[in-house]
Structure formats: structure tokens, C-alpha cells
Image 1 (cartoon, helix red, strand yellow):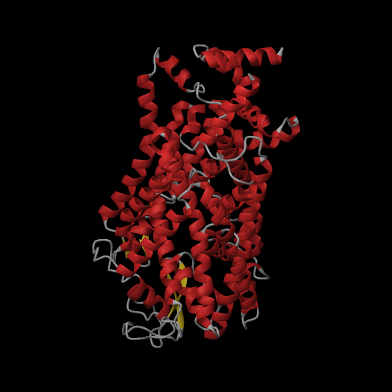
Image 2 (tube, rainbow, N blue to C red):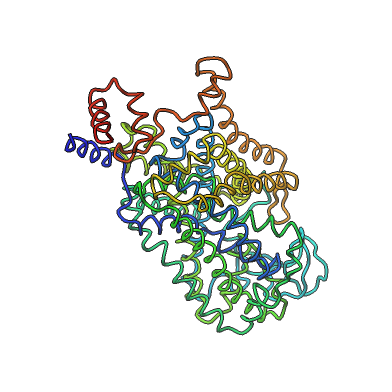
Length: 608
């Protein structure tokens, strides 16, 4: 009988893969969590919110929200070895939360692939000497200037006004060569979302190359991506170190670092609520909570993997990367400010403005500038690819888990099909109005919708499924722990984390502002489309709950109670891991199977 059980276990292991080694999981999870926001968002937030003082609220939020949520999602996926949809067998009425996660990841993967394409294009463009955005060349407009003179405030953000004559900030103010290159050459940007324009073919080709790279890396699922991350998850750190060493040796680097996290730190900023809100939001988004990727990657772990230690290692590495990358960014921006003889604050930007305008402009001022530019954009490429790997893995894992008999043997075809569809859906984002589509999706889908999903996730596990039951599940994987050990995590999951998410969600909705790109406002139909994307994601949460209630039997209250209890399919993937709690349940529900009856009898004899 024991040989029979061993054969069954081996067969089930063959059905769903595991990571070849724990190292592959850690590198994949770190690569997924460490994204472009660590490079182009965190340094700006630190500068804006008091420099080094910002680290205090940032790490407080990491402890009370980031690590507890990451630990929760990792344990949730590892326990049942399923993706973000099937894990909700634990609370069937909330299965729509898993669907919403997958939809968010799918939509975000479309524009994230476009950002990777931008990085590819700039990396290829950097193989020129001098760099094409060094001066005002033939593509530049009449308002291009290499000499900044004054600064102005546009939409609350201090930027350089590149003009030699104007002392105000009219719409016709001069622009730097790097800004004009971004608008006129790289994007060929139109006047607004209404003016779609043709596809920008050099971006479309880079988008195709990005899709091919992702498909090739994931062609065999985690068996192939687990090998690729040895390079893509580690090499960005090598490049950051190189850029940092080069940066700190430049004149003006000290000024940049002082602005970032040095003596310019302003502790009085800690009294401002906005600083704490920015810290919580950055912590939440930088760890990719609510996307489904953390659950998906953990679902391929061995059952007894210590995800508790992993959660600390991954989250602290992610936070450390954000801080570390800021030194490389601000040291070179400090040099740029020194060259132009203007304050560092006037060259600081975030997002696309930092990655594709300010930083390339700063790199163009260095000796051997093409080398540093290639290294920088190759770093952005590898950082972006790791996050994209996780996103695609979420989609394919959910499809394979839902239809194993259809897709299990066709993983390669499924991966190619997924990447192809995302490529086609990304083509509108590489038209002349593409940057407006990217900004629209980012502002609506990859924003506070994630807070709704995460709030329902922590409420569903802590209050409906039950945090105490969840703790017992975790102890089946990592062993029993003391009451004192679990006290902090219970406090976070029951009270601190959901309350914090709720406060941020309400605040984000109240302070929501319609997205703009630069000074370009979106047409009403564009804003309506953005809200429709939000509704499309959220409606699945309530729609699936209502559908399941109609399908259930009994009185309305009995239906709700039945759907708030774990389904029969909720248990560890392998029989050998189900132990007393879940083996007894299988014996009650599946006595009709002769083989299962013998297995249960064997378990009863062994336990006696």
C-alpha cells in the first residue's frame, strides 16, 4: 500500500511543477518585486518627502503592511499549490477577487511591455557617439535649447525652463534636447489622445522583440524562467554598482546625494500626513501586492518551504534596492545640476521624465557617454523583464490550473499565444498617442483598484476563512510556533493592515485627480474609458459572488454560509501533506472512490 501511495504522490508531483531549487524561487520573487518603480519612483519620493527622514515612515509601513501582506500571499499560494483564482477555494464567495487580480495583471502587462520596448529602443539608440539627444539636431524644433536659464512650476512640479529669453513659463518655453528627442523621435508624440496617428514602427519592432524575449524565457514555465533569472535578477545590481561608482566620482555628486538622503533631510516632514500616505503607497505597490504574482510564484514552492523567512528576505531586499538605486540616480543628477549651475531640485523628475529625459540628459554630459547610457537602459530592460515574467506566469498558471487537461501539455503554445495577444493589444500604446494610453492605464488600473483587491483579500482570509485556521495551515508547512510568535501577525491581519489599506483607499479616492500627461489633458471619453476599465475589473468580484449565490442551494443565509466555507477542493495539493485535518475531510467526502477508501483506511490504521 505504501508503494501505491508513493506512486500516486509522484504522479501528482509530475502534474504540477516545483522550483528546481529555492534559489530560483528567491531570484524570481525578488526580480518580480523589484520593478521600474524602485528605480524611477522611490528616489523622487524620498527627495520630495524629506530625504532621509522619508525612510522612517517607509520602513514603518513596510513592517506593518508590506511584510504581513507578502507573508500572507506567499503562504496562501504555497499551501494549496494553486494560482490566484483557485486559491479562493478557501472562500468561494470571493473567487472574483482572484479573477480581478488576473485581469489587473493582464492589463498592466500590456503597457509594461511597452515600457520595456522604450528601454530597448533607447538602449539601441545609445550605440552612437555622440548620443543622439546630446544636442539640437535636425529633428529638433525651433524651441530646442541646450542652455537652461530659469525654472518654473508646472502642475506643482518644479522643472527647468530651457530658455534664454523668457522669464515666465508659457506653453512655448524652450525644451532640452533630451526632452525633444523623447517627444519627437522616440514617441513621435501627437497632441493628445484624440489624435491617434500611425503606429511608430521602431517602437512596434522593439515591442515585438520584448514579447519574443519574454516568450522565450517562459517557454517551459518555471523550468526555463528559473534559469533566466540567474542573470536578469542579479545583473541589475552589478549595473547599479557600476553607475554608482561612476556617479560618486563626478563633480556635484555630493550635492545630489545630499538632496536625496543627506543633510538636506527634513524631519519636520514627518508631521505631514501626505508623507505617510506616500510611504504606504510606495511600499504596497513596490512589493506587487494584489497582482497575483506573489501567490503564483509561491505556489510552485515545496510544501514545507519556510515562506516566513523568504518574506523577510524578499521584502527587505526590495526596500534596500530602492534606497541603493537612489544613490546611483541622484549622484549623476547632482553632476548634471553642477554642469548647468542650477539647484539639484530643478533637474529632479519622476517616472518617464526621470528615466527617458533627465537621466539620459545627465549621462550625455559624461565622458564615454554611450557606454553609461547602454548600461543604464540595459538595467531598465532587465528590471522590467523580471516583472513581466511574473505577470505572464500569473496568466498562464491560472489557465493551466483551470484547464489542466487542455493546457498542461501545451504550455509552450499557451505562452506564445499569451505573449502574442499581449503584443497585439499593446500596439495602440506604440502609436503616436501611445504614451497617453500608457499613462491612462497606469493611473486607473494600476492604482487604487489594487487597494480594493488587497483589502478584500486580507478580510477574506482573516475574517471569513479565519486567521486562526490560516495560522494552523501555515504551521502544517513550517512547524508549530508559539502564541507570542503569531500575536504580531494576527494583529496585522486582523486590524492594522486592513485599517491602513482602508485609510489609503478612502484618501486616494477623495484626492483623485484626472490624469494628465505634462500639460495635456485627457478628453472626456478617455476619462470615461478609464473608469470603465476600473468597473470591468471590480465587477467580477461582485458578479461571481452573485452567480455562486444563485447556483447554491438552500435559504439565502444558508447559501452565504456555504460559500464562506472552504470547498472540498481546498487542501494541500499532495495527499502526503494533508495530515490529520485534511485527510479526515477527504475520508468524509470521497468514500465513493475505492482507492481513496483504501488510502483512508491505511491512514486510520497508521494514526491508531
